[in-house]
Structure formats: C-alpha cells, structure tokens
Amino acid sequence: MNMITMGEEYAIHWLEPIVDEIIKRKQTPIVLSAGKTPSGHVHMGFMREIIIGDAIRRLLKKKRKKVNFRIFIDSYDAAKRFP
Image 1 (tube, one colour):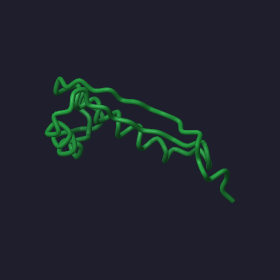
Image 2 (cartoon, one colour):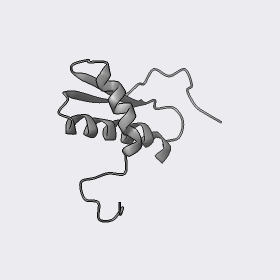
Image 3 (cartoon, helix red, strand yellow):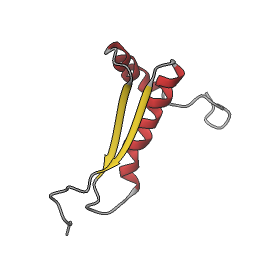
Image 4 (tube, one colour):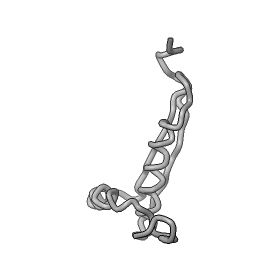
C-alpha cells in the first residue's frame, strides 16, 4: 500500500480489531466520545483522541453501522493550571 496513492483507503488496519469488538457489543446507535479539559497547554497530542475516534467512526460507517461521534470540552477540571 502506497501512502500517497491509497485514495480512500487509510492506513488504519490496526483499528479493525477494535471496530470488530465494538460491533460485537450490538449497541445501536454506537456512541463514541472524545474530549478535552481546558487546563494545561493545548498541543497536538490532545488531537490524538479525536483523530482515532474519527477513524473508528469512518470504519463503522463503512460497515453500515449507525454511529454518533461526540466531541466535548469539560470545563470542570480540578487542575486549574500547571507550573
């Protein structure tokens, strides 16, 4: 698989077992969630959860599963700031 010419195919084959496990639970609709607290510095690392969640959502949609993906920001955080 060439990363440049793969078109609609994504290099996310490692997520297939996770998606299969989600499907085995037989929940309808499937609800995925990802979020961030406003404390601390914002950096690219916090996007990991959102990107992986979206990749799982795409695979589930491809398998014709009903899925909701919710992204939230939780402002209730005990850590007010970091040194």
